[in-house]
Image 1 (tube, helix red, strand yellow):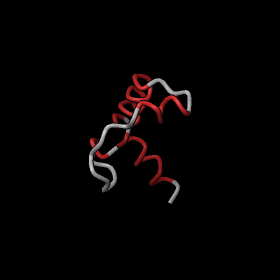
Image 2 (cartoon, one colour):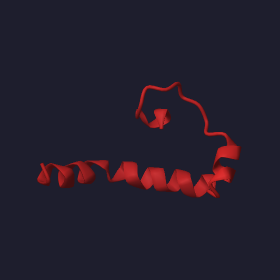
Image 3 (cartoon, rainbow, N blue to C red):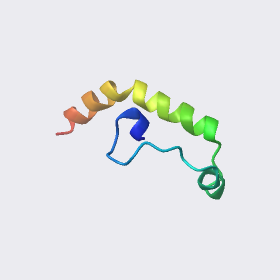
Image 4 (cartoon, rainbow, N blue to C red):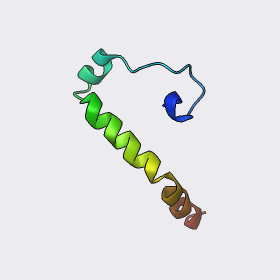
Length: 51
């Protein structure tokens, strides 16, 4: 997530064994992250309505 300016950990790739442990496809995970980040502003606006 650090590659997307989220968090403060050093920017590192997620190790393949971690994906494998949880049965995740790295390409699908990257696509899901991109989709969420693209909608970040809309998500913030929705969250503001609940405050």
